Length: 169
Length: 265
Ligand SMILES: [Zn+2]
Image (cartoon, rainbow over all chains, first blue to last red; front, top):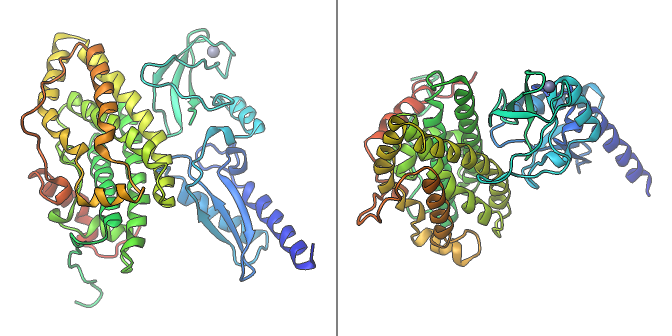
């Protein structure tokens, strides 16, 4: 690798590290790297860094906030001329959520999505979701849509606690 | 008039390129339906449904934003997604009529959600294979959201149809009212024909059997009678010929940017 290419690779790594540490505004226990919202970074022709992020849902209201925070994090890390690019393809899936992210979610009281995104159709089988508090799988859906677009509301019939479930997508 | 921007309405010509017109049709339907759903905020029958309808509204508005953003780029005149959403008058809107109808009661609203999502989900799935990379990306995302809308609304149609006498009666009424507006979802004209030929968009007619099968199955489960084929279906939204309801919706939705041009917050 040339000296320039080496320097660019180092810049890219710094950009990914700085952007990846930004917390999700709605689930602050997760970073955007844990979520898989951070997709890539590159050094552009003008020598600036460009970071790609992708929305979880089309209408996710947190995207504007995330973009601003990523830009601020890149500036704070001393990266040159930072830019944030919103990419739609490939469409985000819960498969991109890291194992560490899933564990953090559970500790936070939110049941993580299934390891491989499955989808129940209108007449499909109900998925098995374990209660993040007591671990029981005797849980039921209260509402398909919870406090944010990415979560559903469930209830544990063992410990009786309601909890959020990060939906599979 | 210093400090006041030009408030003239903008127009997208009827003979604009097919891709732009098609993207606008999809965007207008998504935004108008998203706006209707947002009208439930503060008025839903229970908190869980309040959240569900607001979340679905956000999905539709998010899809509309991606589509308007693309339309603005295709338009290439420096007009933005906001200009397209807020500065066009009723005859320049191209949404399906079913999207602009007032919410009615909860039965009407969830039945509309079901009928529309059952048409949109297969549509987005097919569009995700479009030769147009931007449309394909928007569609792949929207398809996942439509699958959730379909499941949520379909379960309500079943619960209310196969519920009490009162809920069954309301579902039956909603079905009678909305059915004549379903034909428009499968219309195609020269705009779609051009895009179908280029592999950019699927033929809506080809997707109709999948919709019919889904609707028949859910209505049967809901103990609701499948309406007889209508001799005459409502039509016109995609050409800018609307019900009297759209103007009132736009008056509310566009009021702020029209009254305070360039307002930001
Ligand atoms: Zn429990």
